[in-house]
Image 1 (cartoon, rainbow, N blue to C red):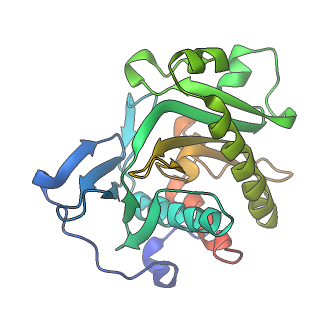
Image 2 (cartoon, rainbow, N blue to C red; image 1 turned 135 degrees about the vertical axis):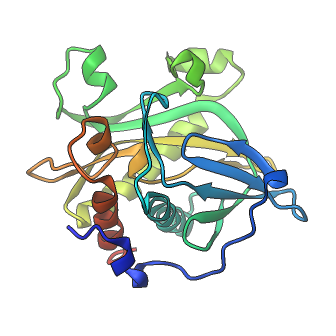
Length: 253
């Protein structure tokens, strides 16, 4: 597994990074910052930090190169989905660690797609880790760290004034594309988190990021991890694992 980003200059985009100033900062997240474009209010910059958290920010580390690799994986996956008819917020990549995106009004619901059991579904049910789910399971969680992102039923989502069906339909289509891509990498996509929002024209778009920070990736057969569980479980180098995924993806995307 190659983990040194400095030895992989050919895997990066080379567009000049934007000037991100404090007065343009809209939101500071756990591992990303959101900046407005002064002259185009319908667009934003998403800047990725060399930072990783777990337990809703209760555990933190600052691995060098992580922001760059998460940004570039996100760009590749967003671009692939756009080419397959999935509407996303992605517009372009700026520098190595910043995305140019459409500004969205974010839906306060996180959508999780599960193909194989792991994580909270194992802790909260009688299912054993590694159980294949066919069809895939789509779940909804309230996007609220202060409440520890509780699980929502579809009826509860509807009571919040949000129709869950368009998000579910999009999530299952995205899952189909991800299954095809990662199978070529000999990787199982165990589960992944999606966030949606509405752009200035009222279109539902996929937002946030798409990286091993918000998905579980296991090598087929061995179940070797290539995702943030390496940090959660203190099992290895996430930048090296993420870089391996990026290098393999670039062979097929």
